[in-house]
Amino acid sequence: MSGLTLSHVTKEFGTFKAVNNVSLSVPEGTFVCLLGPSGCGKTTLMRMVAGLDLPTEGSITLGGEDITRVPTHKRNLGMVFQSLALFPHLTVGENIAYALRIRGVSKDEQKKRVDELLSMIHLPGFSDRSVNKLSGGQRQRIAIARALAISPKLFLLDEPLSALDAKLREAMQVELRQLQQRLGITTIVVTHDQREAMTMADTVVVMNGGEVRQAAAPVDIYRRPADSFVADFIGSTNLIPFTTDGKGEASIFGSSVAGLTLGTTRSGTISVRPEDVQIVPSAESSLAGKVTFVRDLGGSVETFIEAGGQQIVAVSAPRSRPDVTVGQTVGLRFDPETSVVLAR
Ligand code: ATP
Image 1 (spheres, rainbow, N blue to C red):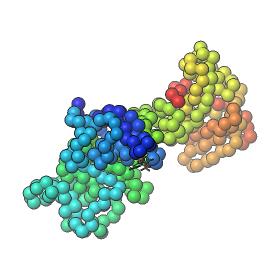
Image 2 (cartoon, protein in one colour):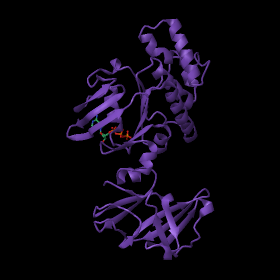
Image 3 (spheres, helix red, strand yellow):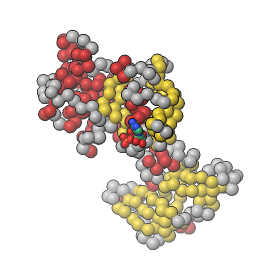
Image 4 (cartoon, helix red, strand yellow):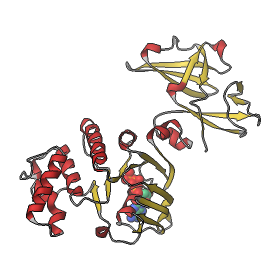
């Protein structure tokens, strides 16, 4: 029963459901990213875990204890929120030791802990510096150290890296993940950046419209998306409608496709990642399309094909670039291993 559990958590603002019946289990020591478009309810969900908002319905437990109505300061949390800036009039060391001082920890203990945390975030000797003279990345690390000073049971971060430039942000993602692994601390990060989520998380929780659409390991979110929202939100994909004769024979764009087992549902949508679309001579596939555009990005080549009235994108490495020209009719093949039938 250790770790964090959310059971049927709902948050209403008036008649609007910002979070709708979310159940989620975060095992102790794991790293979870809440990911989704703006307004999907990530921050509201996080605020309830932090005790900054009360759920309208449902319950939250931490380490087996019901904390749904426990005030924030009694939850033993470390928080880094975008809006929670460092105290500008305090030194780096005073910032980090802030929560320790309030808890009456001795000066010696404070100093020891500050030094420990500074070396952990790769800023040894920074204790007496003014926080106003730090770079963005350094500030972010100090904010993280400050939140970790009390050795919290749960570490919550809301868009912690969004103010940093792209390069620094990527470096900090790796750093944050390594730090979390070293400390083994249960961590939840809110982000709208899928690359960030895929870099850091053990479990990515994809949200939309206040609901959890899928919670799974990054590779499974990418390879086995549960529905068309997840498939489209994570990376890019081709969403292709199909029908079946009810016995396993499938048709796409009105042509029957051998070898693609799509079950016995009458119709639905499959997700095929661009790197899984194979371009073959038109005689070798019942699925035909016309090349409309080729984009050579140097590191990869994208071929746009119009088939069945929709656009299909195929991506290949430059070395296996398909030998095609715009206007040419080509055949398409989807690998049954990588074509995912979506739930909705
Ligand atoms: P973003 O990435 O833009 O921060 P988010 O996924 O974190 O978005 P939330 O901040 O959780 O989204 O908001 C979810 C929805 O709830 C939004 O439509 C928002 O307008 C609404 N909302 C949030 N807080 C309140 C509030 N205090 N009163 C009324 N509506 C609110």
